[in-house]
Image (spheres, rainbow, N blue to C red):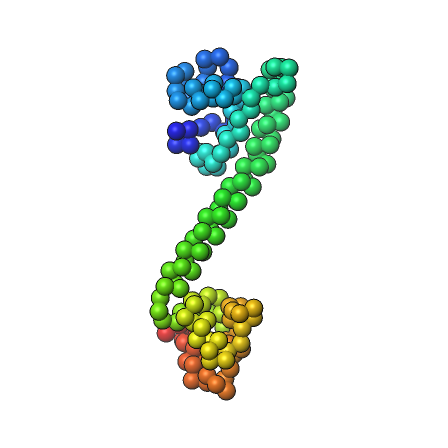
Length: 171
């Protein structure tokens, strides 16, 4: 497949039997079937992340060097944006997977940052905090400081231990 090939990141005119993929390659046959005249790969670090395929122009006028230059400029500006959106989608998927995994743990999992603000809590932890009267914002304690989630008057032993663990570098 084209996505596995090392591809020159420049737009390529597809004319007649000439193709950078080989004259009888499956990509060229498919491009002929689609009537592709100009192939423009979107690449990041020599890896294809997408393609722009242009068919014949109105009145069947050939693509000229200024057209190719304009397409090259378009590739330079949109390829990083598309790559970033793909990374964002992958991060969202990994975050969902992470939450699915920690929510499957029956014990409470709480992750505080160095400022003692809760950054992550699994479902068991959230249920525990809510049942014990800890504060939440929009039904979740995430983003709240330790002393709001576990008020000293009710959870002094817990908060003292968590603060001491933080003072000792997490030990």
